[in-house]
Length: 312
Image 1 (cartoon, rainbow, N blue to C red):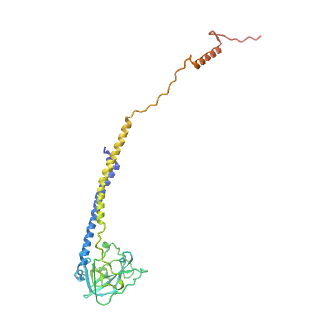
Image 2 (cartoon, rainbow, N blue to C red; image 1 turned 180 degrees about the vertical axis):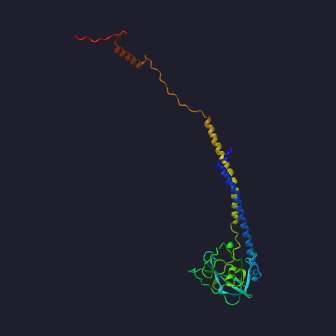
Image 3 (spheres, one colour; image 1 turned 90 degrees about the vertical axis):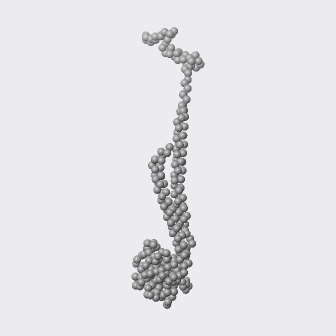
């Protein structure tokens, strides 16, 4: 009774289920790995933010990519700002994560002549995006900056397109190698996200500390995908049993209908011939006979010839 599984409809349905199960399992593990990455990242952020600040030269060096393990480490850097080579980064959000504006990047020249890029914070975009915006002046003289060490941004990692042909002194990515070419001075790999000293009137607005408490919905998504994968074979069995039950019911009805005798229509009643001696039937027959006798001119059973009288 399971031969219906070989029909085209059921073969396609079964193959579809066999494809969906491993796909859903894989998607579940993908979300689970994202959950693990988020948990590990939060732990790293919390650990590095709690560490004692170290001189930037202990973590960063010229032409060296900052290791991922040193990201968000607190560092200090002492030097003077090179405002002549200051640039802004387009399409960045404020602390409210809604208002679009710029990040202000200013090279900080160290005592040995090398420089490190410092993200001094966020400013609003203004009305004219084709011109260099008004940027609050950087402190003059020698100062010590404290901040979080960050990895250079690239299109592959950040997903931000490095658009060319921008207005002067505007960039899309925070990248120390690009800034080294512009400035013509050796730059330490990575950049500092400034946290101190606090800027006057909070302008530029310092970049807030990254969120390292939320783990996101990735684990819930993973469980959902795995439940979907488990539901596919269960649903397949339910559908098979229902199809088999429906087919058995239909077959039983057909068998019952075949066993019932065919109904025949009753025959039309046949009337008996009328008795010549009864009622109206006898009178009719007598009348008919009399008419026949008159027509033939029979007298006493013998026919009588009739001749026309000859004219005189």
